[in-house]
Image 1 (cartoon, rainbow, N blue to C red):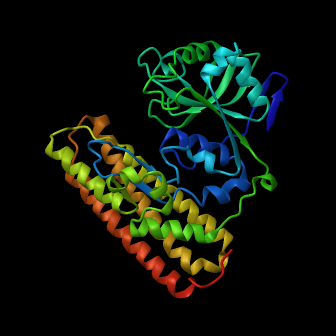
Image 2 (image 1 turned 60 degrees about the horizontal axis):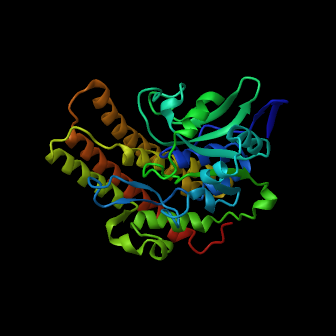
Image 3 (image 1 turned 120 degrees about the vertical axis):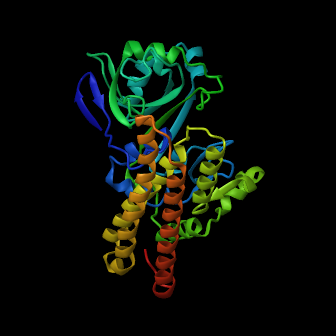
Length: 362
């Protein structure tokens, strides 16, 4: 923890390695500030999934065992997660500003839902009502500000660090209806505290990475999905099959003559490649004896990331330039990226299964 003065506290924070959704960005920005948590980060965010009908429900994300029921941070042993409902805060007549400050002094990052319409440092200020969870990682009582992180502080929707005055915070907090359907935290305030490495009791498992990567390559859902999501098992695509669902989505948009593409899945796919490259670099450092396995994989995933970045840029440039989207170009790139990644992983597992499958790698 960093303490700048008697009335200013700032908890460690870092630009997140993954920022497809607010929740992922918040957790990655916290964990990224602590070097010893990288073994957990590099073991997650491998398998992705999406709805098979993206036009009807454009949703997909990184897989966690209880994706709909429990947020990803609650499966991280380096974080102690607590939560309290805003109704409890109101019932106990608690000063929310002082409460948040005390939590930060106790080394808790605060994830709270606000209406950005009232936050003058966001692009929604006095233009758009809504609900968004903002991460608070510090405060200054003298200047009466919180130090925060979110996508709403940048016109390009980039995850950014900014300041929010206590006055604006109170308005944005009080205007949030905990029972509104758009309030996806359902009135809960989350608190995250980093545990020391010795207390976390997390054991890095190389085979877990291989198992998840193989599931991604083979388009398999992991076992836990059957326990928690059996009701929608047939409506969800996993791994490389997500590319196919994105191609289908673009074809349906083209047929409908709609000029708007929900770019959400394209961001998920790009973030998947970014963290894949970081993961390979991490494994190269941890296992220098496996360079023949990871060197070619890294070079090829750099190219896959470039392809996915081109996809996102094509769509965004069309929006900014107000030009027609070239749907066929997008689908050709999607097909090219999938074919290249599929071939890359086939070659990787051919080498791994031939030379390393039965070796003990810790």
